[in-house]
Image 1 (tube, rainbow, N blue to C red):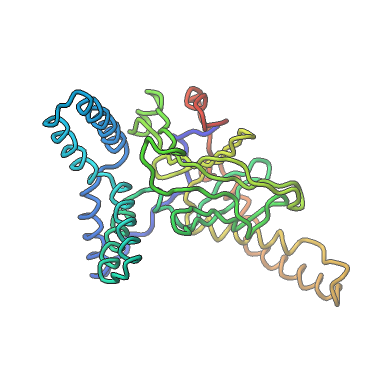
Image 2: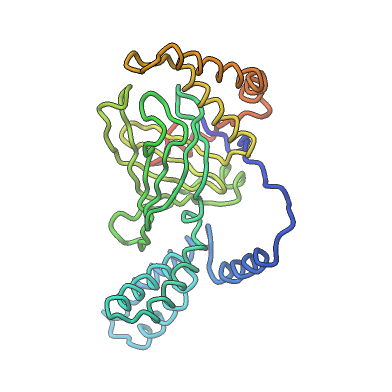
Length: 326
């Protein structure tokens, strides 16, 4: 079970001196981020907006135009603090400008959209992550984006879904809470809220890849990506399987890649290969070289309780909610 108090393997980057260009970029990002709410504050904002929209409907039924105008103005002021709303609006305006051939206006809206997108957490988890794929052990994925779709590709794989194949995807297109396909945040228990300093976890619909050994009978099934602070998990809903992902250190990344390569080199050569004996000898030699330099170190790293990525949890009530599994 996942223990949010025992997550390791996510080491900070060295505190290197930053260039003037990078400092300027960081300063711009902070200014943009200050415009938008995050986490529980954002969820509360959206709940307030929904309540005000209901109030508008009631005021219209009552013929109270003054209240309608007041609430609509309040809604507009609130929505600009939601980065997803700002991103969606700027995207729509960009596409409209493009359809009219207004390149200058489209460029301005594109910059506005990208600025808002940069403040949305689930659009900022690109790169390498490590999770425990059941009996296959720890595997590495690389997260990229194709438009508003998150794509997790296996960097190291297994006999079911090999490296280079997509492990899962997630639809991150901006949606209002009332939109079809929009998922309600997961409300944490009081104990879990104290651990993480947040009351709710955001989640988004996706598709998980599964296959039998040999990458046969492959299929996609419904899933969800769940943001958990600086980490995230993905749940394959029909089979009740969930994997928790953490950032690897540079050292762990290299070790996992080398271990995976060693496993590949240790596989017997195909009978269809030319010069099978030579190929097998080259593989054996390369494997011995790698083993000599790091086998013992790898064993210590992956089996040392103080350094291993360890995910477990005693907060069972959290996993009784839809979308979360043991």
